[in-house]
Length: 118
Image (cartoon, helix red, strand yellow):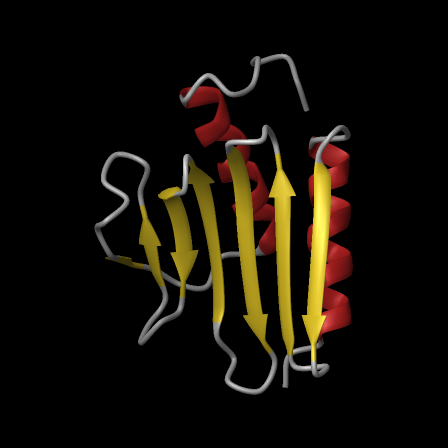
């Protein structure tokens, strides 16, 4: 089983370190499901989902209610690249640090962040 506490703490700490001004909302259900939203703007946020029983994990950067980038392990680990977020590019499970670093890169690309921030 995945430790929801460990994932929550590490993910929130990494995002707060790189993005000190973000708003984070956490929803934990039945000690088995963790949902975290990290808001960069009202229209751009990171949606994270972890199910400790099934092992399902997903991380999606959302802009205007549409996924623009992400990783998840639905059927197998894959990446949704910013160039074509509908693609499923097979990959190994990314570290939470890699996810946070890539979010910063994507946010800079879509001009949601200044390069000198974070």
